[in-house]
Image (cartoon, rainbow, N blue to C red):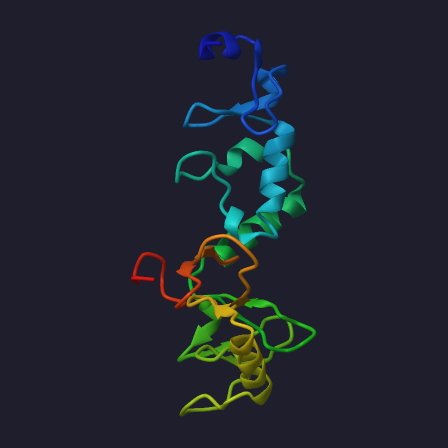
Length: 197
């Protein structure tokens, strides 16, 4: 079907759900030429709120899907949350509040001289170790973290070089993609394609 026919109100096929009976007025045509039905588009944007690997939403190219396509599909609060999560998930080396019942993201604007302040609970945070602020000098060792790392090494887990999350390879190849979107070698932990493993 040509785009001129689709633009005239004909039916189009959604690249996600493969439904080919979607009225073109209930779908969005992306820059790559693919169509997304409104339902799939909304689902993708809502998924991106909880999964950094889907932020920002994309189709088949590295160009993200413009927010204008979901302007009338998302509620005001969802759009507001999406804008906040976009800033959070596209920030490299994110810092989070270490307070157990908080965990709020601390934006770079709230970090000065490697000390951040959580806007939610007002805890001050060391941007070097992501622990409570401890003044100048080296970051103190955390006994619980050290014990966890030793246990993880014993079970042959690997840490993401970017966000330091612990991952386990259950099956498959050694190419890992972390929830923070960093890619690394499971054998040595190096950035993907930077080792000889």
